[in-house]
Image (tube, rainbow, N blue to C red; front, side):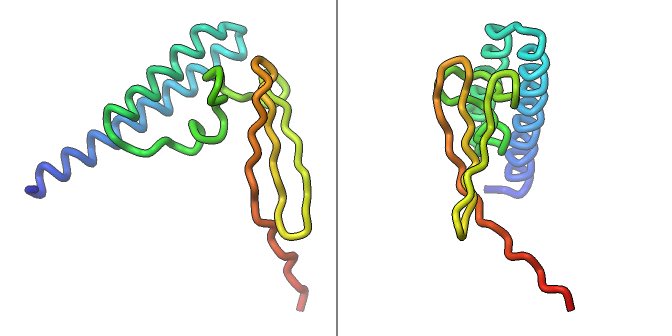
Length: 116
């Protein structure tokens, strides 16, 4: 591949991610207004853009969108968020209030720094 083609491919992927993030913001705003069908459509369009550009999903699409009903997860409005602690890791539990799907995200707990 030539370098100009690689550059244009990167630009295309970057543009797709920017548009998808903009669509996520619009979906979150529509969810806050109670327009769930519009929010679902925005998320579907964002996912379609990401698939078409053949790029990986941004973090907000992986962690803050319900994979079952495609609604943005907003704590207190469309999701409940709980933190369950273990010894070495913490598990963040998100439950969609519309469909009931539970998502668990493990996080490694940071060691407290010793004061010297």
